[in-house]
Image (tube, rainbow, N blue to C red; front, side, top):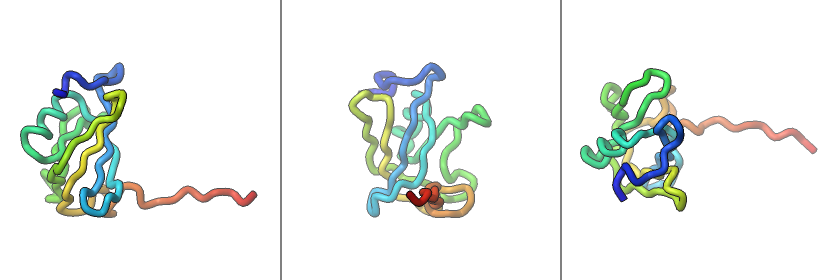
Length: 109
């Protein structure tokens, strides 16, 4: 399938889960449009659409914490992606390896 064949939302975006190819740890969740998917497939590094800045960003371009794409999967509805990567550093802007480093506390029953 090519990027145009995916099912984007009303904003032209779809979510992408980025997962470490070796450890299978979920590193981050981001958003892509067809152009970001094309850039990712062409360069072999992750490209995303920043909803807050309204611009493309290549993960690690300024920090050096690049993500080299091993494989890209899409789900059964073609409305979400899973990118398996080799990460050259932390995924999170806080410096944590993964953006999912915090836990919600469950209330005692």
